[in-house]
Length: 156
Image 1 (cartoon, rainbow, N blue to C red):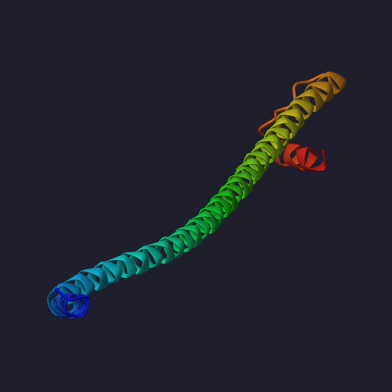
Image 2: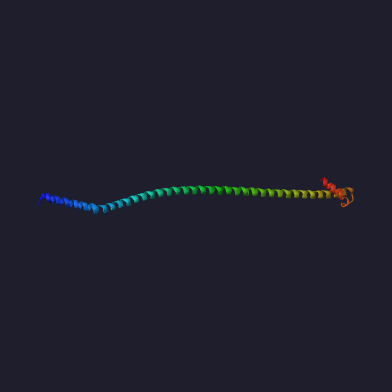
């Protein structure tokens, strides 16, 4: 056989093989490669979206935590303020009670002083009647001179 004929047959076989490869083998192979590339690209995009969502969730969690801390500080401050108000209210109420007790004690003391003065006046009047009866040498009737004794008590 001739080299030229073999060369043409080999070229024909090569082109038929290339044509069959390009017609039937390359398209499914290219589709598989493209699908694989698409899956990889989708996976990378999903990973990026996941990282972005994670960052957003962390930021949102931090802001919620900061808001909760601020709110807890406000609640604690309100509690302390309310506690101080209750203490001040209790002090004011205790002061009012103390003033009432002091006023009652003063009134009672004034009443006791007045009753002691009245008793002292009665004793002085009795002593005066007794002294007058001894000076006069006779018994003085206290009921007869009651008006005079009342005037004497008023002067004392």
